[in-house]
Length: 153
Figure 1: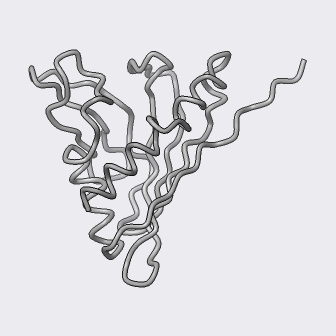
Figure 2 (figure 1 turned 90 degrees about the vertical axis):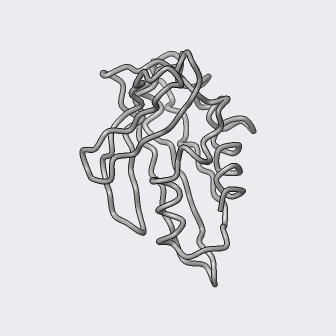
């Protein structure tokens, strides 16, 4: 039996600032725009951290100070490209054995920046891959998060 892998989820937004500022806000300022409704911490989101180097950690700190791992930084190429290892299960709990990739590129467009996000390797979710792809592709998924990012800019 052949299993068809879900297509990567691709979203983009254009923001009115240069790529270096967009990259900094996306990474250093992730906690300022990441929707609190998308928290995995039981106490709710206090901050989100993307360590600024390949191999760095990507995590959330809850309001009670508990660190919740999300994944790792695979590629750190400011101001043009970032690749994150998303290691949250279909139940949005950290799974060290799950690896999907979120690539974000920052391309100059006139006086602004086109921010393109691609969440790929969704087949690694196994039987839940199709369902998870629909969640990421929904209005409350990456679209909502990129919209919040654009508003923060």
